[in-house]
Length: 336
Image (cartoon, rainbow, N blue to C red):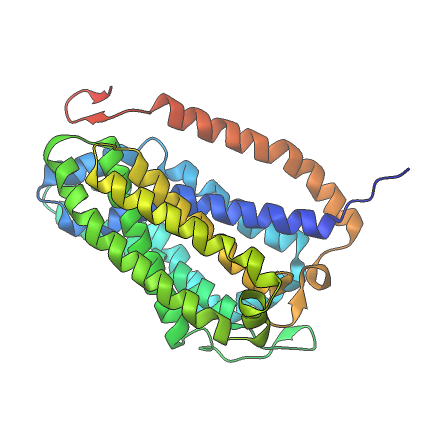
């Protein structure tokens, strides 16, 4: 009996996995930059950058994989989403470029080191805001006519997209604080513990507002969350969120250094699952499904062969890098 694969569905899962992995791995990296102005000294800022120096550029591999995969296997989605989100995506990419340049240049600058500190902070904040705005614009829906984008230049700019932009930026800052709790000791460690609690409260409040607003953007979203028997399954999302919230605050109040970081990552994962529940099987809400925007099966199958080889390799070298640089960061001797 021949086994049939839904290649479009498989690729949608791979793209979603790439985007989620990028958020998990680069979120704390960007959040660390957002927290730069809260550092008490140049030494603290040096420690903050050293904590991600071995891994920061590799984290963005997943952004390239997600964007490149969208172009290759969902060309119609790419052709619709890019014109709709051209401004926030372009600004995000420029912010990441400036952030990367500042990461390298601040170590060599003396007189104008403050300029590169500000650029690192500004690039991190702007990239996070643009990612959240792009997400919000996608969730609220993109106007399509005749298989092409039919909206205006600034349809992406709305109260909901600005809210999601703020939620992502604050959430990334929480991830950055929790990362530093896990990787540092002494004064900066305690300083980040103090910052993490208000950031956690603000993140959860923003997630709550976004979660309450989202079902009212589209009747389909509303039916997914509030119509029986489907709502019996979607109840798992707030249940998991409640458990993670408990884990986050108990970790911040207790002696554990790792628990807050992994709990914060879990909150992002559950939020991502919630968004997926809202608009699956749409790739471009509210009208284009995964199968409507997919490339021909032969193209999907050919690309999948490469993905089967490439994705495990990326996962392997990423895991190896984090394993090698595990543990606390010592101000004088590096990792120990």
